[in-house]
Length: 240
Image (tube, rainbow, N blue to C red; front, side, top):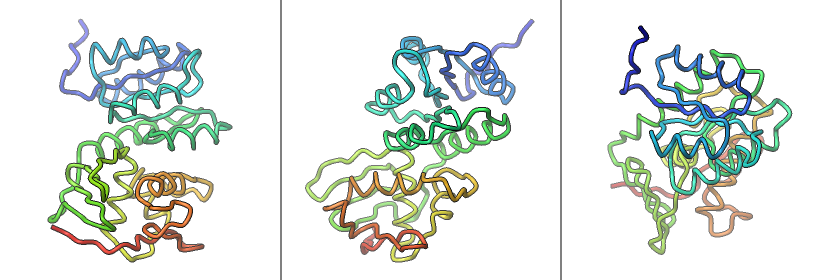
């Protein structure tokens, strides 16, 4: 008789239209101790979420009808659920767009099960950990950033929504102002992946973050490029 699922385990929804691939993904995750729900498209994903909210969604980009990018946009409009996109190796533009609209990470087909599980574990750990700094509220250039609650408030008092990756990047910057941070170091602060010179994740996230906090993103004064090295958070930090 099969054992009952552990209701305290992380709930992951696998969204994949290919039945064989979906079964493989689900099998890897279940063997690692997760609760898994399978969905083949957008409507079945919505039904699954309504029935049992997910901790993380493994989302194929190339779905019939609404693709993974459409669904990522929809999810990010009202949810901080973890999103890992599953892409083909040739889908470089889609991967970048996915990160720009709020996906947390991606894996490429054909994927190594160990890499997939490592990405899932890393994202779930980061979602759970949060910031534990002594002075959680940082003020810079008129902005107020609570690193513990992830709230970012603009100089005119408006709340700016951050994706998880944007929050982690901003947190890395405010903890080390006026220091050149390499892309490698920033990548480790956000995705815990090995550095790949062709990986544009950090550049994409910096562009997104500049669009939210810089008075003129085309002439950044807060997150400044250190050519050939990385980026510098140039604003003064006040703590409380």
